[in-house]
Length: 395
Image 1 (cartoon, rainbow, N blue to C red):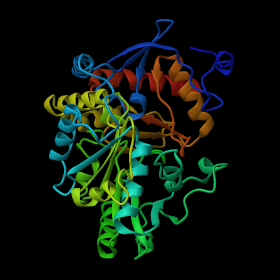
Image 2 (tube, helix red, strand yellow):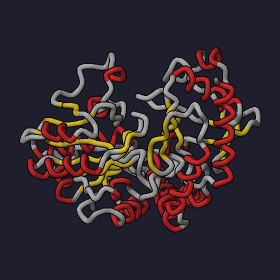
Image 3 (spheres, rainbow, N blue to C red):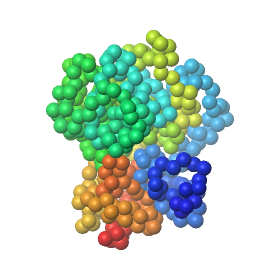
Image 4 (cartoon, rainbow, N blue to C red):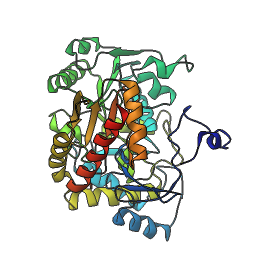
């Protein structure tokens, strides 16, 4: 592990006063290995990115194969690139027919920015409804619709015309009116500590958006690709968004984001002005090759069918008396301890004991459980035993 003194003199920009500081040498499956040859169970998957574990063979092979052809060729959208096209086709084949047009970006924040611009351009309106404790990214537009004032401190003024309702309170839908361009919402609020939307709440948002001509944006950056046991988490709610945001696991470990809408809606970005939304590296061919291989393996290897059983195993094993509650769905769980100091000690002890977990941006009293979907039942037992031991040591 790198000590904080070393990190303070690093030429890399800092992101927090106390980074975890692991000096990672390599990774395989659910394991990370540091420069001192110590192995760690990765229980957070790079924050829901390494969906099929580190260095899945199909993803690595797809990257190697594409390296023999080309890297960056042209800004996004100007050339026909085989992997972009194939990946967009596979993504839309598994979505509602209205979600048939993909715009690839570099990240989730950029996908949110594109979705917000698209909604404003299509509706010719300016107001956005978002929700308290939502997290949509750190760029200016994405930060504007994020629902935490502390995270925004020092970065104002942000976008005007953004209103925040209360997640899961249906009365918030009454804020939707003829000035509303879009509503942006997560199916599960990840950084709030894994808070599931109620079906009635999402359906009410859908109804009000339809009634007033606003677009419903669902941000599935953390929840898509089987994390909840469904390919896309919104599919279990019987609610279809007008725009879907994807990121994190989308690239199979490579940087990639996307926003998806109908061709009719997406077409407004192509004219008046032309190139109204553009990205140099969005949909990078290597990222699309990795993302395509990841999604193909996810479907063909049947990992989504194992999620419910693995969630049950975690819930059965995590029974320590210090645990107040376990929230979430599938392999996206929050282990609530109800105490920040206890959570900090538990994370520190877990790391010493060979397990990596962390907390949530807007909920620092809970442990994050989001391992690769490939984790085995035996590995779950081992991980839970380490958490139990670490909680004993943290008391």
